[in-house]
Length: 500
Image (cartoon, rainbow, N blue to C red; front, side, top):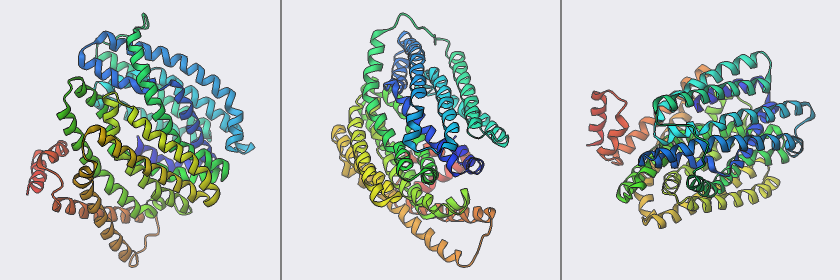
């Protein structure tokens, strides 16, 4: 989905224009904020679905399903009412020009309706996630995304602007919802939709866990989304677009390790059910290795090629988007290193460790962003995000390892150091080759730029792989899971290289 969004972004930007594109971005911020009125209960579904599924407690599992639908129906009505009341004050806060206020109002109300309808049945999506049927869920997401792409292009070509984007998002939501409900009920006959009587024990578990998670969720939202509100208020809509462009690619960069993390909370909940600390520790270190293996090269590669990526993607004329991308990829990337720890504390029902870290980041971000944007403008908002994010990530890693009774220094030395230096050396080699060859060749169009960017990526990939192998970072048992999608002959060849 993230790749499809990236491919569509230049087209949507071209059709909407810089200011209306910023309005569309802010509409997403608003719907995200209103979504937090669920008290965090939505984030507790996958954990307890996984737990009850492992215990074969189908009665409690069905209670989660029924309660989820009932709760989100009530919550959606409240959210719609608030969105209708707040649309005026929000336009004032975000300084939406009068010419764009009609689009803003339609977009906010329309997207709240769409998101609310999807959320009512989101518990079925969490069910497939909780029972670790991501294969089905991923196919459904891809299938629904194809509808989104088709209808986005169709409606924008009709000149429907934000109204068309609301329609295409709504169609995608309907397809996603119907598909998740259908496959959940078809593949798992034990699943039932029962509203009454409410299982109060299940409700208490969902509520207590959700409230703890909600603080973290709100803090994370403030850290990742409210910058756009601050930018819109102090600098204007054009700067929101520059920030959004950089953020989209930075977010896409962290999506690969996020795929690894997405499956962990249900798996950790199942391990914790059997109190298998040794297996949990092994999962933590292996997961940390895979994340470090992907995130450090993504950071260094993006820093090196940021200018070429933005120029290829949306064209020239967006230098602030390049700066935003470089800063955000560092902050988002290093934040991913906390992902294994946050997955563990969520999976074992100790979200308060994540909560403290998230609150620290939120407070730092709110204070620094308002101060620095007035002193340094757009660069100030980026600096505030970087300082608050890195401070919070370091705090969490240190405190989590004390709780986990493992040495953070050992983790940094054994898990982080080799991918970090391998990525740095690979980036240096790529930069030298790129700088030299650019003086000899010129690519006037996007096809030429794509070829050039692909060549730079290949140089980096070869260099990084060479250093990782030479540093003996991965054990043979850690390489084998990465080769499951290759043909046996190629998989054996890869394993033999790492075993030398």
